Image (cartoon, rainbow, N blue to C red; front, side):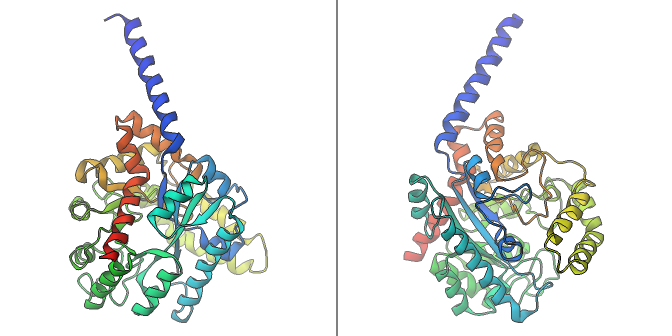
Amino acid sequence: MPLSFVLGLLLLQAGNLQERFEQLMRDILIFDAHVDTPRYTVDEGYRWAEEHSYYETDIPRMKRGHVGAILFGVYVEPQEYPQQLWLPRALQCIDAFHEEARRNAADVEVAYTAGDIVRIRKEGKIAVMVSLEGGHLILDSLPLLRLYHRLGVRYMTLAHFKTNNWADAATDVPVHNGLSAFGRDVVREMNRLGMMVDVSHISDEAVLDALEAGRSPVIASHSSVKALCGISRNMSDDIIRAIARRGGVVCINFHAGYLDKRAYDVYIGNRPERVREVKEALALHASNPKRWELVRAVLQRYYKLMPPVDVKQLLRHIDHVAKVAGVDHVGLGSDFDGISGMVPRGLEDVSKYPILVKGLLEMGYSDNDIRKIMGENLLRVMRANEEGAAK
């Protein structure tokens, strides 16, 4: 075969991929299941409207990244806050979320349903929602769970890094062999409300208990693949398949240490010293308005010690779930603004989502399947939870 003919075919293929990419970017729904920005608004006065050179999320970068919808996470780590502050801190972050949406009403709107997301996008705005990360934040109270739902919370992660009174965490000592009886009641009440059950962070047994107790599909809002990076926070193929059998979606976490075990080993090995330095910077400079810059400098220094992980490794995790469970069961859950700046090279913030679209095209995915991965799978699960609540 003449070389000129081969080169011609390659150029034709490249042109076709570029044409498909441009067509996709005109109307694709890019929907991220987990972004942790609200705490920065509370602690640092971080404003969505301003473009920043740090952290990963703001409106100018969302626009460049063609973002259609984001679920913003609210968390209050029990090891950082005494129990009496869990609820006030959570409410403070939820309020900050709503206030930022109000300030930026020309660009974003709070969505409460899947239909809202579709409508808001048609109006040229970004749909924003809020979620709760850690079941301890309901203080073992179903009435409080219902109140969170009324405030706009559209999913809850059943546990965070620590096992709570009714759900075992994947990164802590198990107490309940999964979920307690009350934990199963929580799942059923979330189904009744139409609030998605998030099984990231919880033990395998807890995931299976949640699937057994509930009737609606679940999400793993920010988890990666254990077969490619064997750490406790990632999901085994068996658990991925179990989630898929019930119609759920595994949304891939972008943390470089969750994508590559070598990076994780460095990240976790440095954690004690990194945490110590951050706490010292905040304590020694408590009255210094630039203290958060000092914290970011610490995190960046430790980030540079990790072996580089690029966007191709993230695409491998997406591809693995698609192959193991089917393309209907994988999505995006970046954990931006919650991963201490430990981002993969090439996907440093929300403006870079289109790189994933290009990567999936180059891997041979169809336009329809790319739409599913980038957002439509998550939208489907949200809609299914709403329909389940109506029954």
